[in-house]
Image: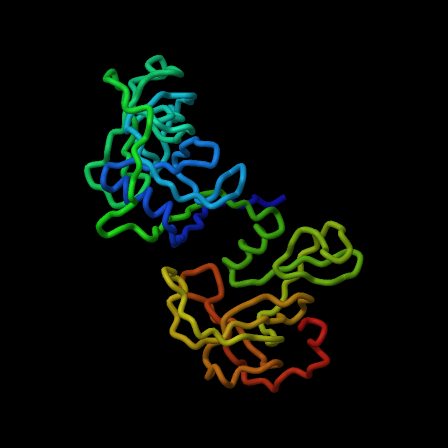
Length: 318
């Protein structure tokens, strides 16, 4: 059995959202070193505040200010902080009920070790030196031996100069991808500028890229078949929006992306069409691969100059 490949992959994008009057006031308050909660229908003060009562579903808007001090209700020790966590040294994740609040806020507690943390300990907010209107304006919590804050929160008008109305939150997923035996063989063949699929032992169809099993018959595939390199455009689309923040797709628009049935394959794969004006690309166009210098993949496909393929030869692959 050939070696199965694996590689670290990252999916990352900025997520932009508007905040509304309650969440916007909460984050603006953090920027101003003020912690706001919202009073629920049962009288409890919810921190962080929410827009609708979790019990009655009524809209909420009675904002109040709670103290920056509070009590740890539960905790868990984090011995190995990860990238972008609040602290880069071991710390405790804690739920803290701030004085005047009826619910707990999740954040980090800066402590020398797990023996220094306990349920019921008193803590206070350590504010970030630079604050922008985000939950990170709370740098962390720290142990506190002083007097508790007021038990009854003070009303707040939610009036701020330059209120925060939206945030951009980076979303990122780091993982290791393993393509499996069949696709590992496919990728390795591309290093030699060959395209390899696998034939189903039952229906005899050749699938490219191979999947390790026939999607129609449900049986395992193992017989390798080299296909192409030439093929036929079965269908296509014209791309008019330039890809953002993607270096390997820095292509001038408009351009054409197509499904291409390689000769000998029973499944069309996708690829970019170049070497021809975008408005001259058509179904049935015969194309061949153009390989990137030093790369392990096809950069694009270009016309071969052959007559167009007859529709009946590829209609099952459209």
